[in-house]
Every structure is written in structure tokens, then in C-alpha cells.
Length: 273
Figure: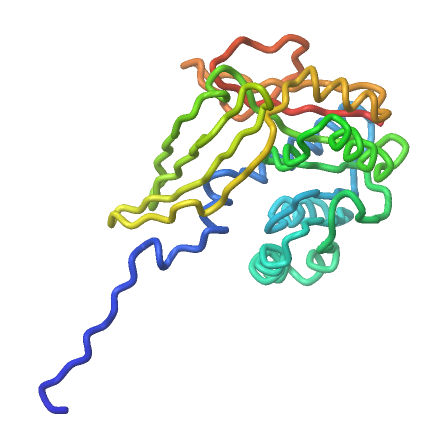
């Protein structure tokens, strides 16, 4: 009709956002992480690692970075969620050069039962393995990992802790186009049970609430080291985050037998088969 115009519906920033893209930007730093894996393996084993399995791989971002960093590298990502695996396949694996793409395999399986060729390095990151809430469950998973490694293979996993890990609180981190909110919604001191959420807030005031939610047990480093040894690993090292000149974590990690009594910390465990 003459003189009439159709009003365009303007989407909010939250409605336009992709939660997987947001997660990768806010939570992951796969370039630094893969470099740490490669250099640590080389230092301890005197050879280069070529095969990598990423448990709880999500979008398989780390697996893709692994194959990008070496023409002989190959990776397998394992995750039980078909939706996030498909996103990773379309948005990450399929965007690799053809030669690299052929060296990434994604498995929609349970990490407890997935069968893969033995690998040099197996990783479980972003505290994903904390879904195992009993010692028996965790030991069983670690035993599965042990069986999935080559004879001199290594298992890399991360952990967090400190007094602030046990508080019900929200922590906000600002990025260029959004604010990342880590929400420790519930914690039970008797069981170690924690319920955590990730929310995103945008400059236009829109939000994505509970973009991701996690129910897990907060494990301590002594518990994890003991369970890894019970599962058959010969030695378990802890790598503590280094500090910058202001005393803040700088994303670099060094082996440390004691750690520091920080209010909040992140560390890597490296278990040698």
C-alpha cells in the first residue's frame, strides 16, 4: 500500500549472539593451552606428541587447534551432546583447510565407553570431568583414560580452588561486546556439590541467562592426585599459574609442588602413564 511501510523487527544483541562463540571467547584460550600441552610433553618425554584426544570436547575447538599446529597432528574429540558436536563440526572442523579437516574425528559417545586408538595426550578441560561426583566414578574415569593412552602417554586436566571457590557469588568479566558472568549459585560443604551457571549481558541491556549450567563436585588437588595414582598413573605433577608484576595470573604455568594459598586459583594436573 502506498505510504505504508513495514516496521523491521530489531533483534537484541542477546538474540543475535551465538552462545558457543561467546563461550569460546570468554572461557577458552586454545592457542595457549595447546602450546602448553605440546611443550610440556616434549620436555618430559623428549619427543613430540602427534595424537590428541579431547574428552568433553564440546565444539572441538582444542582439537582443531591441535591439528593446526602440526602437519602430522591428528585429534579425536569425544562428547555425548550431539547438538554441540554438530555445531563444532559445521563451525570449526569444516572451516579448517581440507588437509587439516581430515585429521580431526568427532565421536558422539560417552567418555566412559568411547573406544579410540591409544593417543599421546588425552585432555579433559574446563573442569568438565567434575561431573563424576564419587571417588569410584572418578577413579573409573581415570582408569579409562589410562587405558586410552600409549605406553608413555600423558593426561592433562585442569582444576580450580581456593576459599572463593566455595562461596555462592557472581563474578563479572567485561569483554568488548559482552559481559561474562560466572555464577556460583549453590554449594554444599558436606557433599562438595556445586551448581554453577554462565550468563551473558550485552551493552543494549539484553541478557542470556543460564547459557550453560553445571552440576558437579568441587574436587581438591590431593584427592585428584590420589585417584590418578590409584588408577595407575606413575607420577602426577601440578602446574601452578605464574603471576604478572601486579600479582595477577598471567596464563603461564610452571610445575609447583606446593602452590600458594590464593583466594582463587587455577592449576593443571599432568599425569604420566
